[in-house]
Image 1 (cartoon, rainbow, N blue to C red):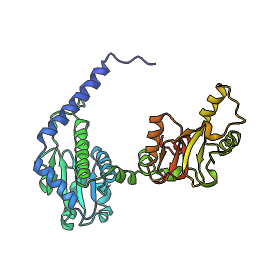
Image 2 (image 1 turned 180 degrees about the vertical axis):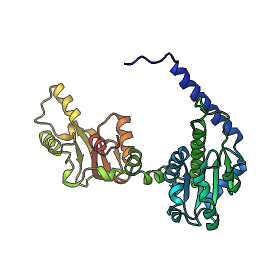
Image 3 (image 1 turned 120 degrees about the vertical axis):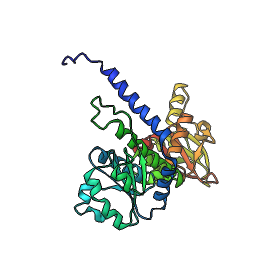
Image 4 (image 1 turned 90 degrees about the vertical axis):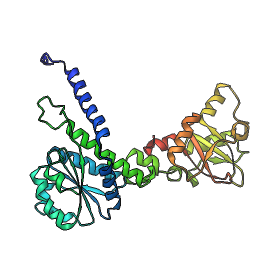
Length: 327
């Protein structure tokens, strides 16, 4: 490894973090309450979408804000201001709200599209660092995010300024989320492929074994026959149900190992003599994540699935949850 110059890089990192943290505290204290509430009201009343735009580093932040808004219940997308001036402005409609980002408030590409936005009658919300800037003055609502010190020692690279704008974007998104009563289920619908979406959308009925795939025997079944059924279905357990399909018990491969350890003669036993009676069961319409919670809490690897009358509907095990990405 090459020898690093004689610089205390850890202290540099701490200084950057403290500078940006202080700027966030300052913004929380200085944020214009009336302007923020007007911005929230405008976005809530928006019949179209929130269009977020910005140039350079502000553009990168704008993309993140648009993505956060879209995933938390506020339809939004990013438009590059230079591309907007060359045709993409047609993507912006009068019913939209434009959220324009520019620390200086003088970005040529952003200013170039303002006259067209005004003609469309689109509500314009600015996030700028200078109250007297062209963008701030032409906006319907200006959210001021001036910073006293960039974390960059040269005072040139956008660092602190981009951090506070991104945080303000999060503040807007979260405030809108609360105003819309956006729920975890709503969030999951926007993230069906993610692990959170799976935990919030996948139900026991989606994963359970049923019908011929279900390892089930009668209470008077010989233990060897029950063991064969357990082995054939490959779930690590066999369920015991009466003639009316009411669940009476469960017998697992762990129970079988314990019988062997005690040296019992298995040939003459019936399954009801060794089963665990009245096992915990879950309903088919419950979330798979809830099934996982019960398994972890009880330190078991499988669950029976029953209806309100206690009749057997199916079963699932930890492998099913792992395979579905619930764990």
